[in-house]
Amino acid sequence: MKMRCSAAKQNQFIENLIACMGTNMPVHLRYAALRAARIVREEIASIDAMDAELRDIVLTKLSPSILTTVCPRPGTTLANDSHHFFDYNRDLCYLKLIFALAKDSSWHVRLIGDHNINWCISMIAEYCESYSLHSFYLSGILFRISPEQLSVASLDGVTGRQWWNMIMKAWYYAYSLIDDTHCFEFLPVLVEGTKRYMQNALEYELQWLIGYMNAAVRRAVEKRDSEQGEDGCVVVAVKEFSNMLKKLVNSKGVISP
Image (cartoon, rainbow, N blue to C red):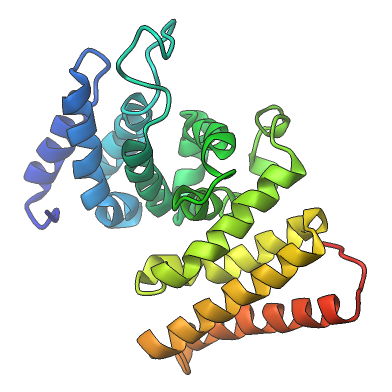
């Protein structure tokens, strides 16, 4: 499904999505609306390509509605509501959508104000202790938003080790996501985020990290035209950081951001 239609039909499509995401709608209908939004996420993310009316609808109505598809109803608990706090497949769908939106800085204030970013932060403890794709998309969302924009209160509950676990899992999955251009283009941002939190790493984890990075680079060279242009810049950024880490580990250097 692509939004390759008239402005009037695009507006109607978004309005229908918003209606289906309403808290009064059945859970299965809200999930279906979330999946539909995920499919056209690149079009939704392209705010500048929309006419003024559609842009206003997307920013003011769709953004808060997205959260209702994953956030439990007020006053409910895991024991008494079928719309559970966390659901692996639903939450991965949600994160892929937010990941696409977070690429455009025009979305940042809205995602923060509508509490989507706070909800993403709440997922760190749930999904980043074990291996799951969620870690990559969470990294892609949170590292694209400047620290100054994020609420200190919302980050208080996230420990340095939790950030590092998320980063390690993100690099683990980078290899399998190289074919996705949007995930591949995020890797230099992930490099910078890794530098910020690497003081939380143990030495053996840095050795693992070097392996994950080298695997991603090999995959990029095999599967993409990654020797030139923007792809080449991505590969160089990852290679240079990997080489720096290797020297650090071999020299028993001090880990610092």
